[in-house]
Image (cartoon, rainbow, N blue to C red; front, side, top):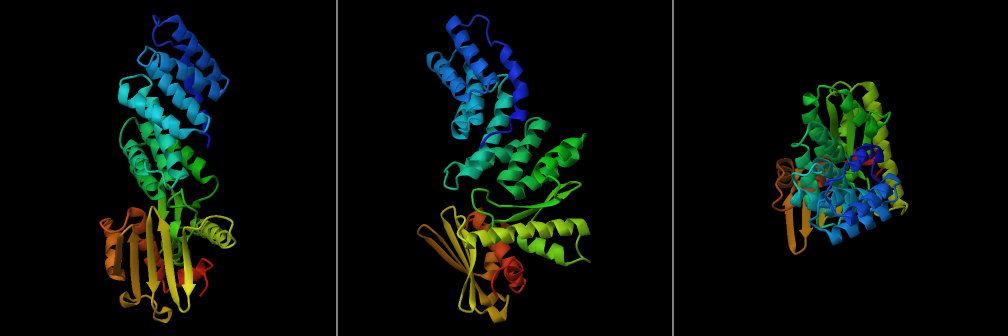
Length: 360
């Protein structure tokens, strides 16, 4: 996946400033070769030239520049994993470098892409922590850039970060540009809660554009917003946009049923019972409605959890308390999110499932 070049190319004029006038001629020649390749967007050639420079002079006068621009070239060439390693090394070794601030911004953007790319990447938690921390530190523009990345990588946390940042912006046009880029002409969009997994009722967040930033709604909340005219804080246009976002989830369900993509979260029906099933991050959660005719009652819902050798069974009320309190001693955060949304769906007498196209 390519980065948005318009956000980084203006910085290329910095290449004209040689880091040290007394650097050996061979180093300057390799640096100039890499500079020309980057200006002409020949990313592999730039990567190779900077690699030779770093190999021959790992601690030379050009080392911090070479790490940054090799990370840049690798990210633009689609290798965000290697770019992330270069930029991590830049921050570790050269925190005071003039390239450090730009390196952090680029590293955060690489982390967002990597977080969405592979659900089995063991460093996903590190990527998430880096992005979240970047929304609370550094310059305002860097924080806003990190919040935009977070909105794509973790919509719920991204919405929170934007709402926290919005009051600090003297120029609200910055926020409008960011939201235009994310929402386009829509007032609401459906996004996977975990972008590394397919969109579906158990892995969906509906983002709603608001004057103060973004609201992040679960499926059950979104359904209530479209159906409750008197109690909803959304106007008719926003409710219509939320309904269109729900349509996108319906279509995602249909595509999954047709076998067009992998399905890791789904609703299946067994006889007169209903099971909400989630698989992800090495976890499996099953929420079983014992007797559909009885609807939502604590005694009518059981939650089963498995992770490796760990197994647990609990009632609906206990599972709901864990989900609401963010208690991850048994289930991971993604599983807790799934449990919270699924129990909310069940509480609507299973009508929400039918409203999304599920069988009754």
